[in-house]
Image (cartoon, rainbow, N blue to C red; front, top):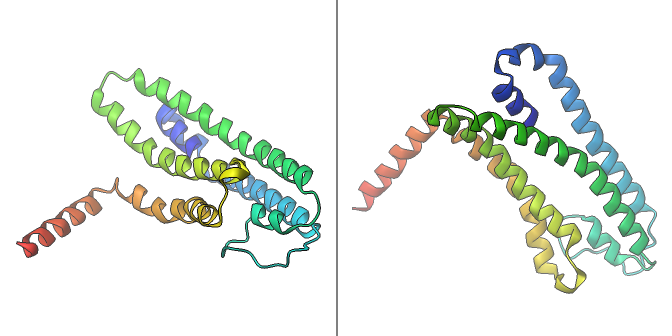
Length: 196
């Protein structure tokens, strides 16, 4: 999404030649391939752990930090290794997103029209909102100190970063659709009128 926004805003006249089907397939393959590698590494590390506290987790998500808590071996080095691998994979995507949005902001701020600036920023905001929700809660989930860890906090954080972004994604992106805005406005007006 960041690259698509970058091309759409910064290289608008070249959009159709740059964002062809081959580019989209390559970007999707890179995203799926890196997440598959990430999942395989986590799974391999997890299955190699000896569990001595049973195999019952306090939550319905099978999260790596909770599995590490069930292990009877010293998991510090494994946890550091997983965090380093996760950070290296995530930092590549983060740097790519950051570079794209720095270029977008530079281009938008040079636009003479305030309406054009508003339109460009409103195009980028939904993606930034979803990425921010996911990133901040995922970072908190994996890098929070053990002293503030509790089963209920772990559950809330896990739900926020794994359920909320996919759930709000369609809502955030569809709010740019004028027909949906008009329908929500009519719905809210009819509800207000019915309550009176």
